[in-house]
Amino acid sequence: MEDNFFERVYAIARQIPEGKVTSYGAIARALGTARSARMVGWAMNACHGREDIPAHRVVNRIGVLSGKHHFQGTNLMQQLLESEGIEVIDNQIVDFEKHFWQPEISNQ
Image (cartoon, rainbow, N blue to C red; front, side, top):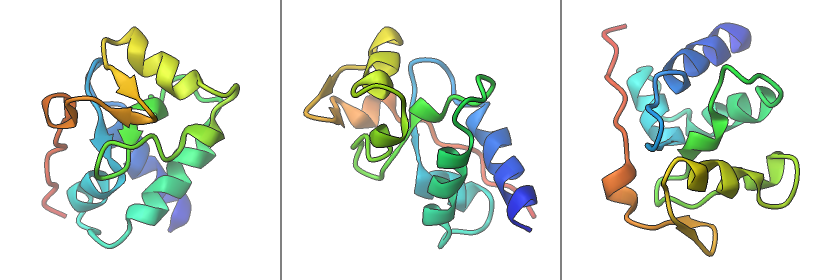
């Protein structure tokens, strides 16, 4: 189940538009597994090195770069977001609501 779940997470993550972010919980809710935000985080951690998955666009529910320590270098996640026009101060996205992208809820 885990691999299938991870691939479903990645399918949603690939849809996040440049300059937008979403949360672990929003992805979990979109998959119909609202209580699995932590597992979404594990999926994001497991995908590093896969350039087809924009893991830097997935943050916690209040816009904190909680997964930043899983990226190479100390500020790579922040740098990737800033290159897309998202301002980050003290590891938190400025105007989080403005940049938030809500994945569509599946009918599974």
